[in-house]
Length: 405
Ligand code: NDP
Image 1 (spheres, rainbow, N blue to C red):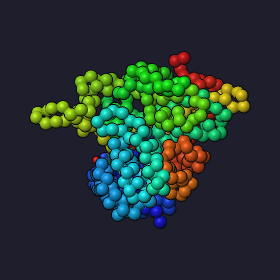
Image 2 (tube, rainbow, N blue to C red):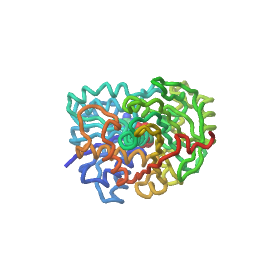
Image 3 (tube, helix red, strand yellow):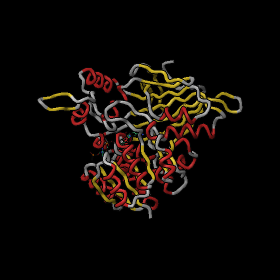
Image 4 (tube, rainbow, N blue to C red):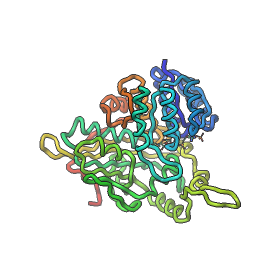
């Protein structure tokens, strides 16, 4: 029987725990560990009440490698599913190398003191993973994750060569708060307030935050303002999708969200450097996190849908074509199933699927990989089975659903 260790008991950790329990024949003995053990206990109780499956709780500081090693040994884990924060990626990877245990995460490493995220340091561990004969699967959430897979699927089944990719991420959920973030506020706000960046003809082109906007008509949702952001899956996709000439990422934001964010930024609340307050050092972004609603509590009050997809344009048998592959989730349906809103759901389900394919040895190679490096078909089938059904439609052109042309 397998032993599964999940690290991080936030919104995504909750979904991973539920979904692993719903696939108990693969995941076997499940332990959920986090900095605050009571959060693990609460999730374990909900899983037991709903599905009758027992999950063990544990306390761990995932910044501390010896503590991680002890926990991995004690649980006899076959795999570690890292859904803590991107700051913990390297320590958890290093503990996995030391213990000879497979690793999976949903977000690339981010340095705590610098608003910069990239795969460099994780990819640099490829040889260590190969030497330890273990596998590391990076970015197995939705974006990164399923969006990478949609690109690999398009490449495999629809094109001889893909020229352009636009990733389109729309969350049309309404939680009733004037301002809240759907996942960890620190990670979310750092990502959104940073300069935008896209890749064209072999070069990265930088934009001011929110400088490029378009209006996209999202199926089952409607027209939404969509802003160009830098997003981490582009870093690996430009390496792995051959012949690509341009890749961009757009995310929808409402006016209220952007106005609040601008105001918080202008007064210094998004700062990540310590400041002096009443004789104590505080980090403004951390203080803001304390004030904002915990994303894990948004599920119960969020209504509406998410639609995340990929428009790929290229050539098949000499003819130009565009396709749109997308997935729609309903926040209330997600909550009914696993007591989480759609953003945590769409991240947690692919994390579970990636781990399932690794444990079942459907996707298995020693080394460190991004998910588009594997055959997309088994994962795409699992998405349909595990609660994230997707669609493919042909478009007349790459901007056929763009309304502000
Ligand atoms: P939350 O902030 O809700 O949860 C993070 C959890 O990690 C918390 O329970 C926290 O523990 C735990 N944690 C933080 N630091 C440590 C530590 N040092 N040791 C042990 N546990 C720790 O975040 P989310 O659940 O929203 O996000 C989880 C991950 O998923 C993030 O990496 C995020 O970037 C990623 N993500 C990926 C997406 C994708 O599509 N690929 C989309 C959304 C999120 P405690 O509460 O006990 O302090």
